[in-house]
Length: 214
Image 1: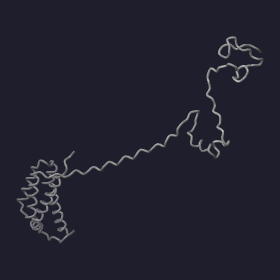
Image 2: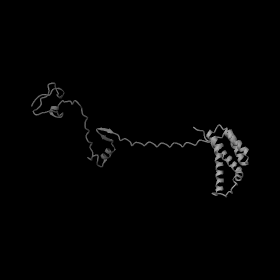
Image 3: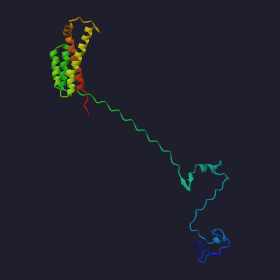
Image 4: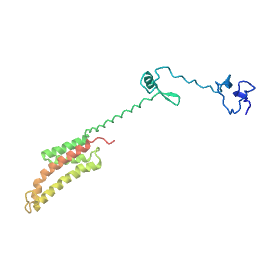
């Protein structure tokens, strides 16, 4: 089969006569490739440098140079990426300092002083004045005021009555003879007053010096 190939695959407008059996392709180094210019030029293949003939995987200067060269992948030179540096761990948040307690108000301080004075001296008038002044406190909430004036003294009085009842029934302490309950209560009233006044003063100072609510 003979024919001519026109166009870009020929070295002249008239074309080149192809030999029989030729199905395509032109060898640039052959007789038909004289004066043929490829449409897409190719990069020249570098020849292996003359050396001792050792491959890149063998020992020698060639092997060391190949080991030190960057990796070749897909015809492009790619530098080895450095290992990612781990991010430093976040520093722990400092612990919040406990809010400082504040000074008691003037009314609360005077009421506590009267209650302490009544507990020390046993003067019930001083204790009553302290409870009355604590009732007018504006720093304490109403439940706290009621706890200072009513709940704390009531608990102390209830504990004293429970103690006397146990003595009457012979459950604890020295047995109390029948008919002597009133006398025992009269004798124990000064002690009961001092304990109640001291407990109320402690509760009052504790609640009046608490940190302000956020």
